Image (tube, rainbow, N blue to C red; front, side, top):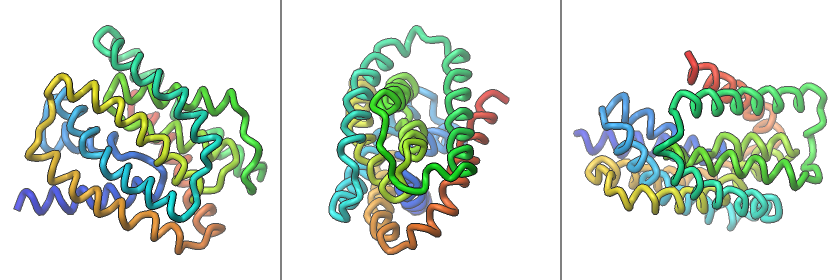
Length: 247
């Protein structure tokens, strides 16, 4: 029965996070540490192992629907990959408390920025993105992957929304970026041989099935209604996540 629970959990998380532009590693990390009682090091490696295949499948699905914005995605990716490597190398010496406060502050600021964009109605259409902002969001995401084994989806999806993309192309472009960062982060964590294979494989299979469904559901949705619901929801989730990290 445990494997059924893992499959269903992986499916639901994969479906939700791919629909909102995340990678799911943060969710898996929380589940693995609190529900399955894995150590932080093992949970971090297992979460990336679980998230990467579903990201790959989801990104391909988004590519087929033509929703990925490669220009801004490539700028984020080129900044995120070196940051992922640096974060993985520095993770043993970075104080966890300092990292937690930095990430919490970033999530709070990103959430507030999205809410401000909604209120002033300046993000109704995909706007010309700013290269520097795209690079900064990519760096933050890469550091989150390298240091803590997260997929780094929060800064990427929030940055894409703040830069003016609507929810569907933002989710698609985020999945594309996260494929690269999660792959690099997974390579570093694989070298430490910390993956719990029995739990990770079941979660991964469920997550892949969820990722197959996510692009199709997004493509069939009403873009205006989806933006009206998901943008403020994403902003509030980022703010809540930031607050809970430091409480």
